[in-house]
Figure 1 (spheres, rainbow, N blue to C red):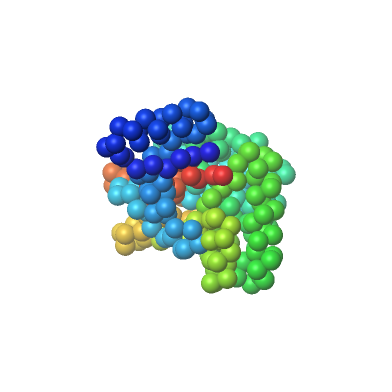
Figure 2 (cartoon, rainbow, N blue to C red; figure 1 turned 120 degrees about the vertical axis):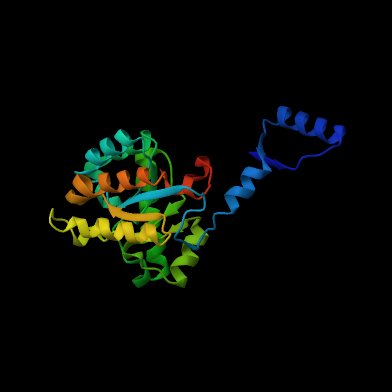
Length: 249
């Protein structure tokens, strides 16, 4: 149980607050942190970081066979990222997902079946989210408050559902389209898109840890560029100024 309070100059009220927290085991929560958390909207599309000097590398569709290699690379750079995962991938890669969370990366929802939510009725949208929530809680003991809709396909009904379910909806401002360039001769096109996106002021980068060239080539090039620009690669929750304890429920 949490008690939100404002600073008071009354000694009596301060004494009452301290006594109440002791007697009823209430943990105080600083109002400023709660107000900061509310700044990240639920059920609204988010495309850019809010914290200056940060970039969010985000990876969709995993975990997969290339994810461990990607985790090694991120560790080499001291970088943390956000992974928007699908439920159907978990049965064969639970250990990878646990490692991802344990190494400080953020886990977000990408629906259970990688469903195009905008094409589904409301009830099936909710089912896609709830099924993945159950799978993630069974594996990690947490349920994320961040999600990305597959194909970036959203409409008013989807946003309403995400708001009611308590999700921040993350889109992108730098789409590498790496899925279309998964070949050594083609992946430079994704890096060019990354550069163009950064130059245009983008800061939330979309890539996929299920594609070999993204992990083998593109991510290192992106990290080198981020470092060269004096930027910091962080999870999307951090780049929005949202305290880490709000990333899950």
